[in-house]
Image 1 (cartoon, rainbow, N blue to C red):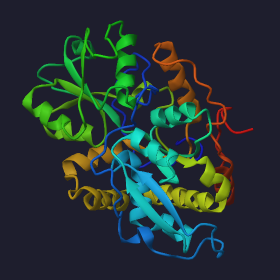
Image 2 (cartoon, rainbow, N blue to C red):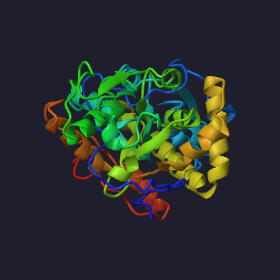
Image 3 (tube, rainbow, N blue to C red):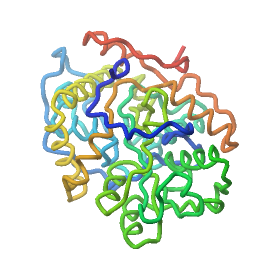
Length: 382
């Protein structure tokens, strides 16, 4: 069964035995980004329903005329893609308009949030922690979960047949220090192999490659595989690759945070009613995705086409969609574990994460919907 406050699209375990502990969401707090998307960083419309006015849940006018919401054109941001595309978030906001913005990199989204041009964002754990720690706990809060899973190690089956065959090969990650890059470095360390985290050179060659470029690099043979999020992983499989490891299978509960919902502390303080309305929308979106997986998949693909000009082929989106778990639960304990792994690997100093979560409004929404509350793992505001 899904964890508390969690809904699932489909779960498809790979059946691999858990041999090491790794985390595709392991944060490196040095210029990290969550994962690269397939669209522009400029503000774009995200479907006709994005700005459509509706009746707020309680019939009252909210305290802000608009809310600026940022996310990536990635399937791991399915809650945002579907919630905006279907007008489910807009319905809860009433006359408060959504101003969507899409980003390719976590740091640029954090910069927008810190610079006051973004109010709420969907983002991975690494940049969220990075932004929180660098601001000395003053810039953002994690207010909800959004997704788990959707990260795989895909390889050329002619060159790599077992996990031990990874040694001596060239494996791509999205960017130095991003969530998947650090996870792979951690996995390599657990195998007893040595790689310089700065250069990527060592027992395995870690090749930092933008997700948009990785499929071509794979087809050309300049890399032997990649540790990447969806839909890049399924693009590689469609090009002849084989899934050697599904990140989900490396976690004891088969869940780890890949996307959270964050909010500017200033916006949260000044407009808690708007944040609450957005969270009502995300919870209802996750429920709708769970109840209508095929329609939700089509909706996410339509949103990707709007944002990037191209939809995903069935051979890509079908397996990719199955590997992603949409969730209201931020899976806070996994965030703490990921941070601890980064410290253990001597990649970061021990961060103070106290207060990184404020789940007050989310738990209010969940309670009103008859759902169990979720935990902040002791990292919430006091």
